[in-house]
Length: 292
Image 1 (tube, rainbow, N blue to C red):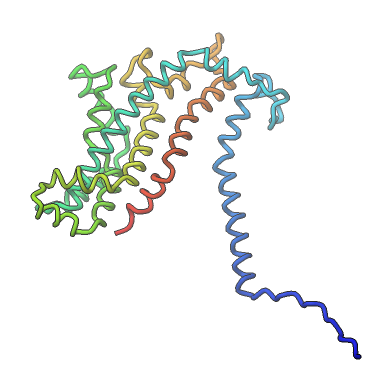
Image 2 (image 1 turned 90 degrees about the vertical axis):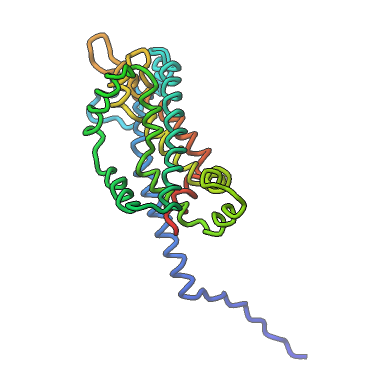
């Protein structure tokens, strides 16, 4: 009886193509981590600043981490001003503007995408070209108009801005509606629907990704706006952005940087929560609106 020799199983060879895929994936993930760190770095520094004592902010060399985490800075920043009152004003203004500008931009985008009229391409080019105008050029004439009609220190400016639509959002809706099948529109016309019914019953319900993206973008614009509320609203009706930038001042007239940083963190949190809730629709809207 002869003994049978047993050879150890040789390890499976990895193909060069698979190695390249793994290396490329590692490089991609490393780049994403680095880019994410660059974007989160300022916010992390803001949080650390809000947890420092005033003496640590003036220390040289710079102290990256606080010696003791001053969590009471957030409580002091909340109590130093009418935080909830300013936040309520910001929420009302941002919600009014975001809702109205989303609907009005959707309606205008639908018209540019599905209707035919002489000079439509020229008008669309003028609309897109208006995005090149800086806000400061139109803000002063707009203020004079609102002051003439007694709309200063009211919510009416944001209502009218919302009803006038936004060029960038119109472009998003126009691109999305242009990619929908023509058969949907033709079938609705055969059933007796006008273009108003086609928009509200067929096109708008299918555009939830762009609606979500538009609402988040418009809400962020208004929530973070400093110039317009500072110009059009009184101190009592001002927004949280203005309050964070102007009210955290010591008796000597110097800014309380640690309290201002703590208030800024609390000011950013609602935007982060809205984006986390609507991120699926936001990403889908930004991706599908560019496809024909």
